[in-house]
Length: 217
Image 1 (spheres, helix red, strand yellow):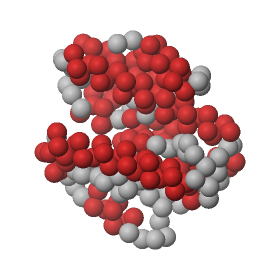
Image 2: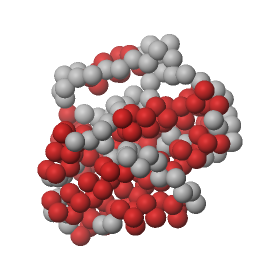
Image 3: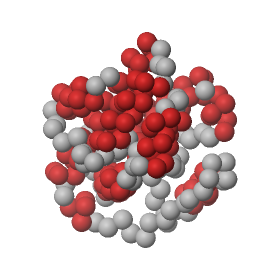
């Protein structure tokens, strides 16, 4: 795989040129090298993996373009954010679901993390289509990786962790554990700067906030 080809494919698909913070692309470079050298991907796996990375780049391009067209979103603060931290299997998923039950709180949902940019005027249409796509992905996870789904399952419209948002900056634990990539894991734990990933995470939250403000183009 070639990083430039992945980014060019995203640009061609969106017609957009901004792939995000150049610092964040360091993670993509490390991930691609580790995938080629260490992951032992099958032919089919390699064919699926490259489009996944390109789709992440497409989502970043579209999100940044949307915020450029709606700069007022960045002027609205994310008020009193609450963060839940914990090691795996310590009840963090239960905690965010309990917090989400409070109608006064606004949690990032799984389908929003996967589809942060509105593509139609009707917010309800966006939600229905994006939820359907995310729910289809959850069903495939149950079918092909039941052991993972049994340990950690998220429905399309349930609160989600930060992994999807962080993965868009190629700096996430989720990418480390999908298949063996020791050099990526070392980079993630000992060398990576998480600042670009957290910056984009916040921008993604601003994109999603528009859905609570009413319909828009």
